[in-house]
Length: 271
Image (cartoon, rainbow, N blue to C red):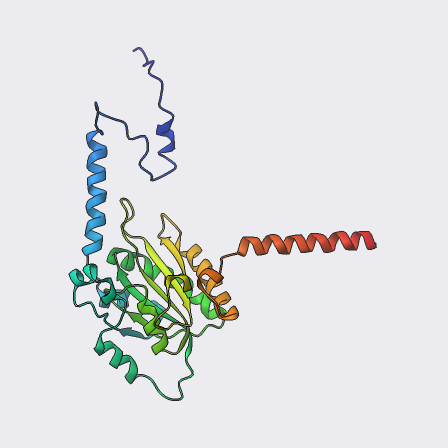
């Protein structure tokens, strides 16, 4: 049997190294049927993720091994439709939740280092899949650093800025919110983490640090936990966040290695 003399498209090899939609081929002037169906499926999964509802009790059950108290809170958004059309409602707590948090305060409460808020955001799928994995890695690292965490807050239909109100209510030095990111075609379960020092109403996005694309196919939970631990410890130590705070671990390591090399050269000359 004669072998085909048609040269192999080198792009096909690259498909084994990236989930990006490359080397799709063509059927006449259009995509092959398989590729078109795959794209339509990915698009449908992304749309479904936006409209899926968070099961707060299931999330709490999945977090049971962590053994931390959990508060159920509500944003001011009454339902998913309002949440999507009125972002401002997701940025603040409902009146009932404000009252519930106020009732837990005591005059002698010392406060916490970090308040952690959990939400579906724009992808409940991301919250259910990634939050338990991330917290399993993150909390031991934080506790090893001596960071005192407030009770976990589960808040469906929340936007990032709700961390300011909740962090202030817990008298926390910093606040971290974990929530589903806007789904992409091929990544309907990506989690985002936002850190702010001195949580209070009026903070802007310039005051926040973001770690995004947390999922096994993106930034793996253990790597995200290490990044967040560094940012949180630096934020608490230096009392900053946002544009003033960078993940400069590589730069610091280079600087330390340079200083060690300089000292070694100095000792060599002195000897």
